Image (cartoon, rainbow over all chains, first blue to last red; front, top):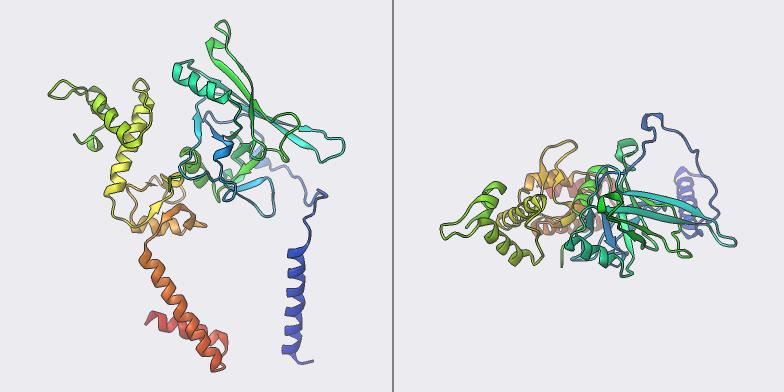
Length: 222
Length: 153
């Protein structure tokens, strides 16, 4: 067989397999596909950085918010609708926090409950107006920066409630406790939990993600 | 009164000849531009307002045709660079460096049209040369060479 015919045949075979790969159904079995290793140069560290961004779930541009093609827990672009912005909740030390847990389902894929706990330091009229807004039932997404950032700081940011949103679950204030601060917690609603654990946000690199976080993911009005 | 050249201490402490506080005048102007509530008793917020005000006017004065998306304002020019690029200080040189970042095009809300039309012209020229080459039974590698040579002439 002439060499050029052989090469052409190989190319046809390769094209056939690549087309079939694209049409293949997504693997939903959830089998492990690689080792789970300990990177000793990035040992675990607890906590999140002080400031957190809260975004109304309705303000997220779901069309232009992108997830990595090969890793569903990695968001590569968090984009808001035109003219919308996130809002910063400023904290001190570890006043704000995040948590998540598995929710076992009997006859369905398991889900994850995300919880964000925050503190409003000043019970001023302006801050109470915002807290009052939180209690009106809208769903929110929280973006946090972990103290542990991983290699090249690529795992620094996490998004809680991206799929189903977080709702205000508790909000308390007592003049005798916690220096009269307003304590609140937002969590996935029971029965409407998230499909994954909190997603990691990495907009190509740490610097760009941190810049977007610092700008509260502001999207200019058209 | 040009607040864009003042520092925060001047804005918060000075009084005009007619006895009006600079701060009051500044906040009136700020709210008329940005249409949002302000908190005069928050020093951090006041610094933020003045920075935003300055950026707004610098961005308007800047004639560079590149414009960053709002969420990428103040992006470091390079890894570890102390230069934070925003729409107030962006230049064509800064823009070229940002474009060299991995997927750097995503930073920009606007790019010069000239560059786009030039590249479109180049693409159409290359396409026509490729089709010409095919019609004359040239191999693609040599066709590519021809297009590059002609484009640079």
